[in-house]
Structures are given as C-alpha cells and as structure tokens.
Image 1 (tube, rainbow, N blue to C red):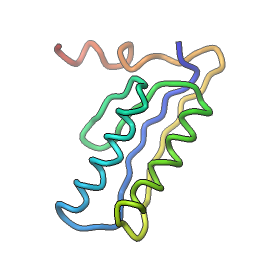
Image 2 (tube, helix red, strand yellow):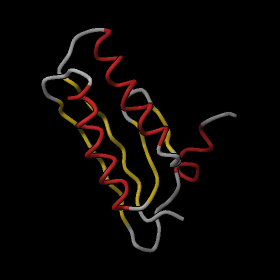
Image 3 (cartoon, rainbow, N blue to C red):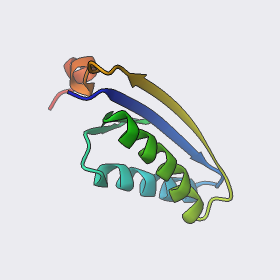
Image 4 (tube, one colour):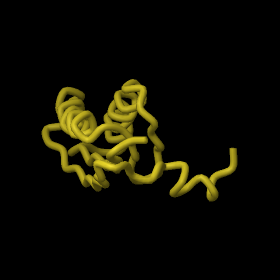
Length: 98
C-alpha cells in the first residue's frame, strides 16, 4: 500500500508537435521510475511514497527545461495519508477494460 498518489499535468512552453515530444519525455521518465502510473489524456497519476513522488514532480519540471522548453507550468494534485491511499485500480479499475 502506498501513502501517496500524485496526478501531474506538465505544460511546457512550446508549440504543436514540440509539446508532444517534451511531454513524451516526461512520461517516459515517470514510466522509468518503476512505480505504478496511469497516463490519461490530461494528466498522469503515480502511486508511491510521498517523498519519492515529490522528487518525481520536481524532476518533471527539469526534464521540460532540459528538453528545450524555456518555461513550464504544472498542475499537481496530491493525495497523502500515512495510513495509505486508495490505489489507481480501486478508484478507476471498474471503468477500464483490460
């Protein structure tokens, strides 16, 4: 059980296909963390330890800048409970077919 989940939407200052390229780099990084993540059309949700997730949020900003965006805005939602948070599967599994 995880003590936190984060939903992050990064909005790099860029245009057209360049935006998709930069966002794809962020998603690849998130997937590479090995944590459970769900990519949606507007945001990506990640489950894990609170401190680890905060580092991931920080790195997502830096990835956008290193990928060429002069700036980035992000919208972040955080669910934290030391006793554990509901999983992505519990919250949305019934809506997705496998």
